[in-house]
Image 1 (cartoon, helix red, strand yellow):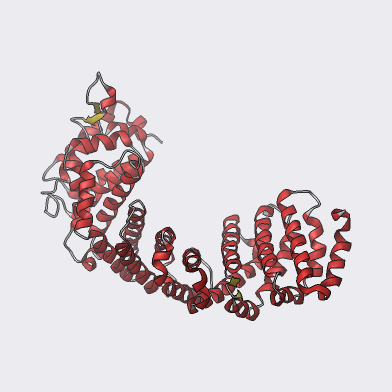
Image 2 (tube, helix red, strand yellow):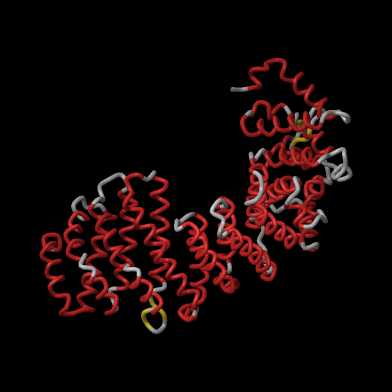
Length: 502
């Protein structure tokens, strides 16, 4: 429903009334906050009102390319005046009103209202200094984490992040660039990293409205860091160190999954860019995975992020990986995770498509990790062999493979094909070594797989044909590796698929 359309000819008068309320020096702050909240909603859902409240005017009517400015009846003029540095921290601009003003500005950036944004920046030369002033607060990290000012700072961080993202090509405004230089010089990255750590330690004990504020800050901090290309490795290590401390602190908290998901997503993004510089964090990441899995025995998004981060780090270790004890722990965890994921297939039909997709994509990540870690410079990774043998992992994934192939014609066929292909790539790789080739044969599932495979080429679908081709490769490699011990199985395979092969 359009409020602008409902008000009709009275809409300008309503705007002027609200403008007067915002301008009133002795007015009720709660009323002003309510008006600003209305403007935030207008940005999101009421484009008609949004065009009215900023009251934008052309700077030069003969040259439209020069852009717009805020008109005399613009509510944004009042907002920028309220945000003046001399008002912040005084009775003129209490924290809740300050937050409402910054929230409105943030809504413009989130909604990509570029015309209004440009007019807002042109209105005052000190605009960026006023927006960023809360980020230079001298309060301790603990005080900020427990204060309502945290939400104000979250919106400010998000504004800067979005401004940096949208102006990536043409570059940031000079005033913002200077402000960010001061941000670095005054070690505000380190300061806000400590705020993040304090927030994580108070999150689980906070009230629901405070938790919402905390999550808002975590999301903004994540966006802020990811849009800033930090080249200082020492600074990055400090930030990741605080991030890991918070993740470890919350690893036993089963009620903090949203917080953990955001935190681990940030960790993955930071670690994946320069993994070789952050190898020292691998033991702590694996420890966090162990604690989270021990607390819930379920696989959630945060564990997936940690698993992916571990893979990035292990890949950068090269030949040193097999000698690191935490790599062995990671392999064991991968097998444990895979068992949980495969067990979910017993209830596959009851899952939503989103849950099935999560299950398959997570399984692909774990299987590829096991495939990568199978060999080291000396041959088979003994930690891998021990973990896989102890958990009967090969037997389990082959049972799932048969199940995927025999039920390929339902609406989740693409997901099942992706999982089948990934499993067969792993089996193909390990079928080149005698020990693991025997493990495949001793599952006694190969005859069942051989018969089920006939359906992989009935409809000549290219994706399922790849499953069939990989199975042929695995069978030939098993024959080469096991020689006479595999002759009967190979003859059975040829007998079943001779028509297709000829």
